Length: 133
Image (cartoon, rainbow, N blue to C red; front, side, top):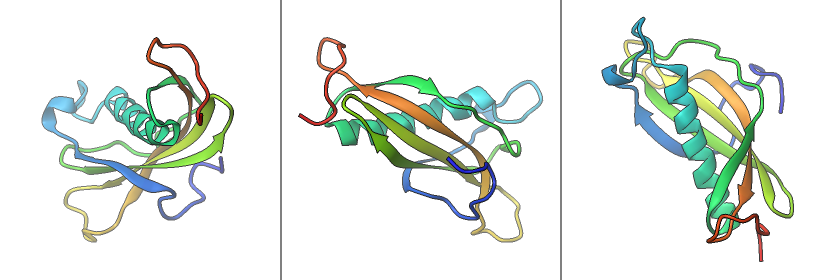
């Protein structure tokens, strides 16, 4: 992965897009970091499942820094890029870019966070299997 803020535009494929709602906020009225991580995990799962042609699970999440809070009404765009595929695992870069409400440029996306997810392919019994048969 590269330094957290050196890429001016999203990398990878748009995998998940959703709106941050009022019921997703923390005690201070910002969108919870846990909510964001949960959706990043879903996006990594979607990308990994496509690559592995089936069931996958998260093994680890590498470091994550939040660059700015996500406000209610923000359009959250989660991009994924498969960086490495091993025998049974995949490393997937996940980036979150938001379009904040009430911005002067309605088309501008701002990077919020990124992380590398390590996923493993599983068989129907939950055992590790090869990514590609």
